[in-house]
Length: 391
Image 1 (cartoon, rainbow, N blue to C red):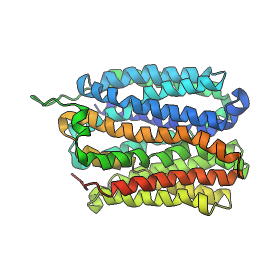
Image 2 (image 1 turned 90 degrees about the horizontal axis):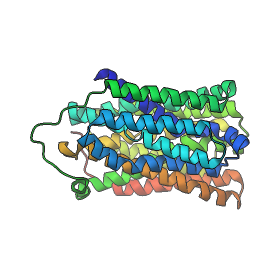
Image 3 (image 1 turned 60 degrees about the vertical axis):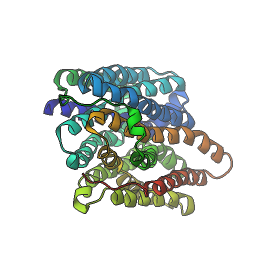
Image 4 (image 1 turned 120 degrees about the vertical axis):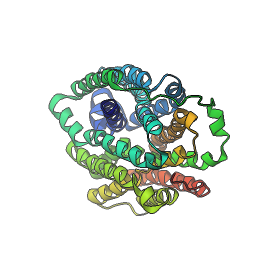
């Protein structure tokens, strides 16, 4: 089981890579196949929306056929196949199709890991395990920054993505071989996702899931590259450095959030304070834009660190989900988290394009990032009414 979980974590590391590598690839994709920032915003949004929409069937599959087959088949066909399609892309439409397929393939791997944790370990340590898993997996976020920029420069983007397709296929085969499905308790009751949706305690947490991941995912996954290019004239190497800084901050944040609920005796207020800091940082681009690229990098790092509450919010929701609905519970939470990021990414492209035609580009980016902050503040207002839980 340890080896199987290790390969699930490796698959999620690749998932983190795929959702973030467009920020580094944006200049070369625009130069070679004419993919504009708006095209890539839609491609990124399609990744998140495909990932989110797959959560309901993935939840059913985890509860009914187990994590081994669910994760290995989808990751092999979707992630590996989508990466192969991406490597052969000749126009922006193929990039969008490839990102959609990769999103479908990446959809089950983290939830399969969480499903195994929820079946084997107590709810009290679930948040720590979830944070550590995402923390290690966030190395994929780091690999999609400066190392990806180096690989593109050394080997070419098509060759690099082809190699990723091969690695993804090998990881899927290892999951099929090594993951063991945990046994369900005897006489476990039946239920459906409707039972979860009828639970009023979950709704403030679901709303928080919808907004909490969108700023860090949207900025790191796409907008940081165009921002430092168009505002500060950064080249590929500098883009790699800035995205690496934000990626490292996100890794540190995932490890930091993990044990805080047990150390401080609260999940709710850890999540509230951390996300309030993210909202303020996003709004700062609107009201007092940073004057240097390194000042911007520092703000991006704070957004990455404090915006890493995603596993903690899932742990909060997981504590309210009955054991027999574990698979559907964690995937419902993930649907809202990835769905929110996807909606914001999909809307951000045309929103920014409209702003850029009316005002200086730095002001357009400031308003774009400010919208991320406003959405987060609205979600926090709803989340205030949630019931705290650390069990």
